[in-house]
Amino acid sequence: MLKDTVPIESMRRALVIKLRHHGDVLLSAPVLSALKAQAPEIQIDALVYDDTAAMLEAHPALSVLHTVGRRWRDLGLLGRLRAEWRLFFALRARQYDLLVHLTEAPRGAWLARTLGARWSVAPQVPGRGRFWRRSFTHYFSVLRNGRRHQVELNLDALRRIGLQPTLAQRRVHIVAGDAAEHEVAQRLQHVGLAAKSFVHLHPASRWQFKCWSAEKNAHLIDQLVARGERVLITAAPDAAEQAFVETILARTKAPVINWAGTLSIKQLVALVAQAKVSVCVDSMPLHVASATSTPVVALFGPSGDQEWGPWMVPHAVVTSDHTCRPCGQDGCGGGKVSDCLEQLDVARVMRAVSQLIDTP
Image 1: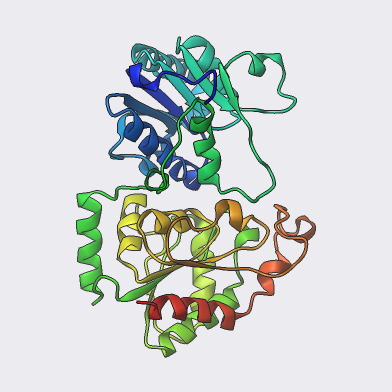
Image 2 (image 1 turned 30 degrees about the vertical axis):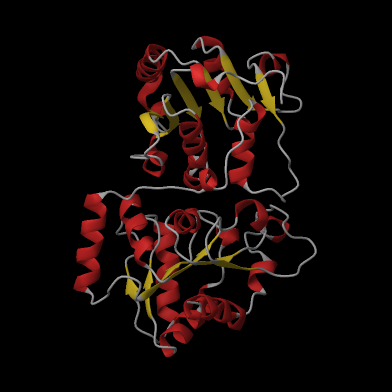
């Protein structure tokens, strides 16, 4: 047993900080679950960016969800200071006993110093300097070899302070909500789709180098429809992602239900939960599939599938045998196009989808 284990059973409140993108925030949800399961009386708050709040909203272990505005800098100096002070005093009023900081964001060090939490844990950050090294009471090691899933890396923060999450506590959990579930059910009924009667395809990402080609996505759709499947395609309400979907649809001969750019995050969660299989690149919907127990086919190129792949759900990861991957680069030579993805064969992806559909 660790000599510096924290007395979690005596704590009243904890704050978990995850200031990253949507998928990263969702994969931190097991930290909330594990904390609550091992200390049922503790109140657990979270601090995330406002545009990622939907990833944790209504989580059963969550008490209060605090947010940092992505666009606070657009408020001007005075407006930003007001927003920062409101957030700080709201956090300070909660009187946290434990602060769990899951990233390298400097804000976590400042909060560890100023909120008055007796215990705090953060990742070791080589070269960060004395301020970081003296801001927290505990530090957890971060294995950066691409072989440890992000869920486990997040949970290492709890292991460092003496908690050992069970397998059940490591599951990713997300709540769509009654309103989103009702709206999606109505839309599916309108297009003649029942639950678990369609294949969901989310081919886009904010990062172009993570995307499979439009031509191969179109061929996959054609083959799925020829197999007798209904295909529903989604994308974020982003001009580039929707343009990518339009390019795919222009090259396919099969009928596709196109909901690209029309869903809120909660509605996307409700939709993915109803799919028989979800086909995604390395993006947030991939992690939503894991959180909703929807079988998923994940296409991976330069990013690490062992760190960011499907989690505790029936799945298939389709990737190449390029010896250089995962490289984490912005496409080969920084050219936004990843050869390891370009070389993926449609037949391989089709076999992976078929196997998941046909598995009882």
